[in-house]
Length: 493
Image 1 (tube, rainbow, N blue to C red):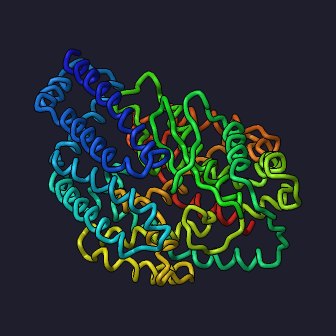
Image 2 (cartoon, rainbow, N blue to C red; image 1 turned 120 degrees about the horizontal axis):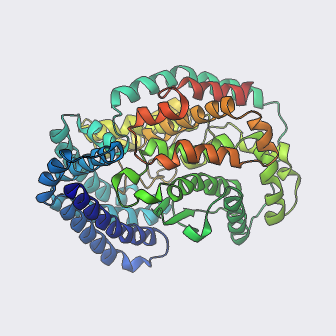
Image 3 (cartoon, rainbow, N blue to C red; image 1 turned 60 degrees about the vertical axis):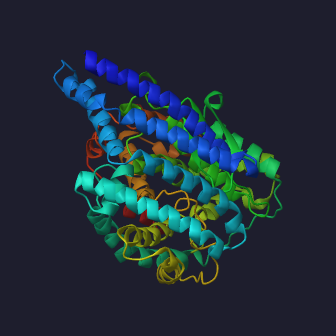
């Protein structure tokens, strides 16, 4: 297997260089001093160009063809499939465009941090327009290479095999039943008495609380860490996972649940198959599956009534004893359904509305049907339609709240709600396969959940294409009915 072995060596080299790129990017968003951004942007663009050069080396085409004729086993053939997928995507983009996109994303993302605080849409717009211009150019190249629409070509980078027609069908169904469910849940919760927490909550104490929750959920601190950033994220590499959150002194729960969310991402990365590391087959299968892990932790488990019994003593210990942290009241706090401006703080019932809104803007934006100047008015109209809130003039809590578009992560947002659907499907399957799962969670027996995820999802990497991985894990391909059943059971059952 000479050709395949050569391909393995090349991909392992790219993985090691990508490791440095990931850590430099994490530092850019967390600890880097502001005046370091131009130099860091240039360095990241240089590294992006180098990696693109390695990924498109002329000899790769013949090596991939030769490897096809070698005596490969099933695993090697799956590995070769993923190498080819990576090669095709890389070859679709000119190196100069890759470097330009990296520079634009670094500059836009860096400026966004201060512009968002200042509600400065006018200052943000030129940077965003440059990012969108380059993204459209990349989408055009990918479209030409794949025969897909521009938006589908981007979506395929994050969720292989998924098409906007699939998203339209799933989101169209959501739009039919979700508004009524939101109204029904709010009507039911209106009569409940909920004790609100009394702050302020010291940021250092919140950090210790987050670390305790990570420990409870099995995070390996010898292979990762928690820091602070303007927008929560999970980065780094499987061997060195870098998670961040952000703190508010008047409300401790958003940071805590953000940490639990990112811990789901982190544990997935930490448990990807180490023996395959360096190869595309070792990567997380898709961003929808990645979000299924964060939402399995944050929503399925984190908002579980039994899990409130595990969080309650941690909140008491680190933030001080108060009635709000009692398990029953804590569960009510974690499952309050109330339309709000901020996606990352949204409850799991209204959360899909935020995703639908972004999808319905970013798709026509990529296709050139709307321009960046149209975003605020469209955002406000859709926010009023879906959640009954106005964001007119409120860019900070409206169209500037997420870092994704400023950093060129366009075509990504549907993955969040796909992830919620996968997560509901995982737990529906677990309840069939693990007797007494819910009672065990209330007793603090979380390992059965983690073991199931480890066996069915984490250890599989990209061994299988998405529908087959989902079928092997749950007995069926993605079935959104599990998500609707989960919400109705938890909130109206």
